[in-house]
Amino acid sequence: GTLKGAAEEEAPEVIPFVDLRDDTRYRESILTMHKLGLMTGTDSPLGQVFNPTSFMDRAQFATVFYRLGRLHTIKNPNSPSEDFCRFSDLPKKEWYFESVLNSCKDGLVEGYPDHTFQPTSFINYAEALAIVVRTAAQFSETVKEMLDRQIALDTLEERDWFVKYIETAKK
Image (cartoon, rainbow, N blue to C red; front, side, top):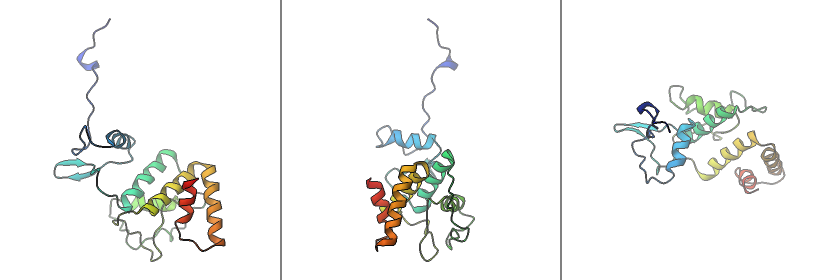
């Protein structure tokens, strides 16, 4: 056999977040999301943290799906207009500006009727599910067809805005 030199030995895994311990729930999923570049954590006085038990806000969630779309090159033939994606509470100087704007242009996120995005508000289940389904529809013709059928039903009957996403996800 051959002996491994010091340079050939497997390097220990570098944990990118100071708050990620060996017994952290979902540790492997968190590390995978980081390796894919989907989640980078946040700065803290202690170093880079993940905050695995905290809630995500709308800007953070939109950023994850924007990055996912960039891994797979989303092409939205029905891209909303620039005006549709102009949110009054989306300052250009914020870290999430490009991600939210491009997620909107890709058809993954939408704002509120008052033309706000509310980037620092926690995302609720319906909003998160809508983004997941819209993203899945970009990658799967079957999901796109199911969502299109649900959207058509919206014109026939009065339903809450999120029903089409829940019904598509159930299928």
